[in-house]
Length: 376
Ligand SMILES: [Ca+2]
Ligand SMILES: [Ca+2]
Ligand SMILES: [Ca+2]
Ligand SMILES: [Ca+2]
Image (cartoon, rainbow, N blue to C red; front, top):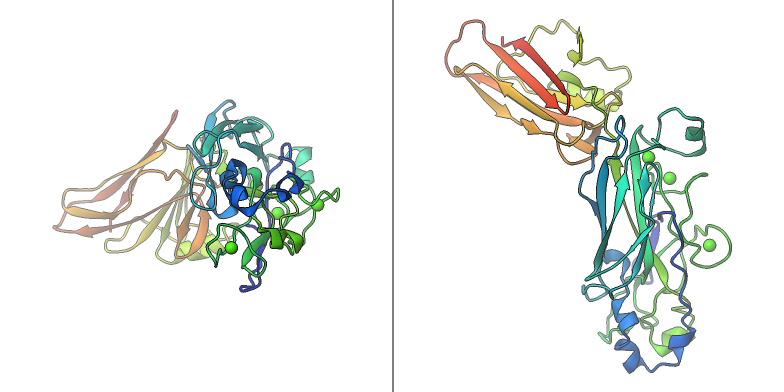
C-alpha cells in the first residue's frame, strides 16, 4: 500500500500512503552537518529515529460494534524501532488519522510504542451521507487508520559503518497519505499527511536521494539526507452492525459468490425473520463441503464476540470451523477476499440416524438466530 522505490541495486516500485493530522515537520539536517560522523552515530536523535520497515500499527479490535453503536472504543498502538531494531527515542511524536469515527490526534512514544483511542461515531464510510461523494471508499463501513512520524528510509549498510554512504541501496517513499479506499494510490479527497519536501502539495514521485539523518559526510555532500522522511503505516477496521445474515454455499459456489456477490444467489440465506432458499436447496448433504458465511447488514464481518455454534446428531461427525468470528476485517477463501466470516463445514455419517438435522446457532450482543437444516 505504499509507493516506494529501491534505488541503485533494486528496482521496485510501490505506492505511498499516509494519514492525516498534523505533520511531524521536517527536521533540517543543517544542524547535524557540523557533526563528525563519529559523534553523529552516537547522537541519540539519529540513533532513535524509526525506519519505515520497523513501524507497525495494530488495534485491539478490528471489527468493533461501530455501525449502529456510538462510543465503542478501540485502542490503536504504533510500534517503532530504529535501523538496529531498538526502540525509538522516548518522546517521539506519532500522528494519527482515521477516515471514519474519531481518533486521538497523536501520542508520544515510551520504549518504542504509544497508543491512542479510536471511537465509533459519524462519519461512517458508505452510510449514504452527502459527504460520501467527497471521499473514495472500497467497502461500506471499512475505515482506514493511518499513523505517521518523522523517521528514516531503509538502507543496506554494506560497509557496516552505521551510516548511509553514497552508492548503498536504499528505499525511497512518496509522501504519506490516507488511503481511504485501500488501493495504494492517492485519489481526490485522500488526505495528504505530510508535505515532506515542502513544495506545498502532494508529491507522488519518490525522492531520488536518501531521506533521514544517518548520512555520511560524503553522502550529505552528494545531496542525501536533506531532511527526514515520514514513516507511516495503515490498518483497516470495520464498523460492524448487529443485523446478521447467514448464507450457505456448497463447494465451489463460494467462489462465484465472492467474485460476484451482487448477482450470485446463495443456496440458503437466513436473516432475522426472513429465510430464502434457492437452487432447490433442501438441506446439508453428508460428505460435502459447505461454506457458512456470516455477515452483518452491510455484508461485513460481524462484530467481535459474535459466535456460531453447531449441533449434530451423535451418529454424525462434524469437521470444519465453529466459534467466534475472527478479529479481522476480511477472510480469505481459496485465495479470494471476502468481507465477513466464513465457516467451512462438513458432516459425515458414522451410523444411521432417524431424520438427522444440523442446528446452527448464531449469537451476538442482543441478537440470536437459530436454524435447523436436514442432513441428507
Ligand atoms: Ca474505506
Ligand atoms: Ca554505510
Ligand atoms: Ca486510494
Ligand atoms: Ca510535497
